[in-house]
Each structure stands twice: as structure tokens, then as C-alpha cells.
Image (cartoon, rainbow, N blue to C red; front, side):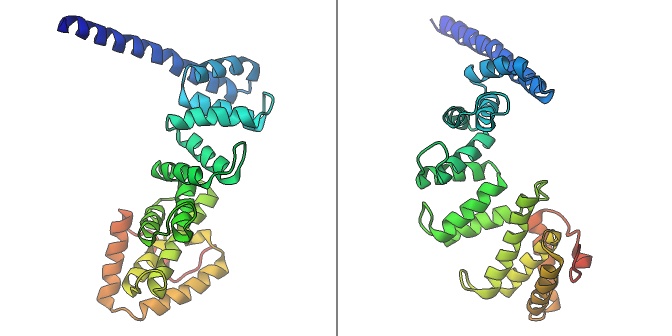
Length: 260
């Protein structure tokens, strides 16, 4: 009996492996055709891959319905396929569903579901979702105000490195600066000038995201904090900043220079 069960189990695994490969091939083929703008050939293959359950194909199909690039635009169909993809954890689809429920696009506006998707999306490492999550915990939108979690996600966001997207890069840099201000001012969390300086140092790594004149103002603020620390504290802060980033500070020599 055990041998029979083992045989059935192995057979099932083998069938699943064979079954999954054609789906992957269909998805790959559909992307190749889409990249070449051969939409008529891509459409049936994409639809088949999505119907068979490939999460990326489901997302791509949802996106096609949303944009109407090569099929009739349909927001309801878009949401249907984004939902299927998000249920399998496809990061881009989870992000789309956060926006859908947050803004009421194709679904009834539901801040609780938007928050659930935002949390999952942030846990997937999406910078924009992390940014929204920080705001949720700070303002108490769709959740209880929670300074601890706001600070936790602010730090997680601030540790992200060099996003290719300029908007996302701005979220990272501004969060680094906000952490410096929070520790400096002591309004939301206890005042800690040492920690403020640590975050000013980390902000300095990507300050070019801000305007030249804004950088000049921040330099003055940073100097005011630095002047209240000892030489040893500033050296320790540099070490702490490098520990948070997991690398050496690359822009430390330009600490008091604004960049274009």
C-alpha cells in the first residue's frame, strides 16, 4: 500500500513538472512576441498562459486590458486578471490591487483591502508601497496609528539603494531626511542628535535627488546638529551609518557640498 501511494505521489509530481514547463514556455513566448509588437500572435498565447495559471501572464493580460494597447480596454477584465495574479503573490499585481482599492479604480473603494495589499506589496520590497505604508502608520489611515511601525518601515525604506525610478529614489532620499528631522526635533520620537546625524550622513549619499538650493539648506541644518556632537560621536555616527547601509559611505567627502 505504501509503495502504491509512493508511486502515485511520484507520478503526480512528474505530471506537475511536465505540466508547468509548457505554461512557462507559453509565458516566455508571449513576452517575446509582445516585445516585437506582434500582438495578434501574442494574444492567444498570452491568454492561454494566463488561463492555465501563470501569474506573470495573468498580470500582463490585466495590464493589456487596462491600457487597451492591443485589445479592447476593459477595467473589469483588468481587475479580474490582476486579482488572479495577486492571489499568487505576483508583486506588480499586488501593487496594482493596492492602487485599485485605494483609489476605487474598477472596484469599490476599500481602504482596508488597500492597506492589506500595501502591506504585502511593501513586504515584497516595493519602494512606493513602503512609502504609502509609512503614511498609513503615521496618519492612522486604514490602521491604527503606530509610531513604532512607522519608524520600522521608514528605516526599511531608507535603507534601499539607488532605485532606477526617479520618483522611487526621491521617496528613499526624503525618508532618510525625515528620519534625520524626527530624531533632531523630538516631536514624534525622542530627541536624539546623534541618531539625527547618522541619518543626515545616510541622506547625503543620495542628496542629489533634491534641488541644489534645498541641499544648501539641509547642509546648514546638518552643520547645526554636527556642532553639538563631539568628534568621537561624529566618527561613531559614520560607522553606524555604514552599518545601516551595509557598505562604506561613498559621498562623505562631499558632505557639505551641494550637488547638481
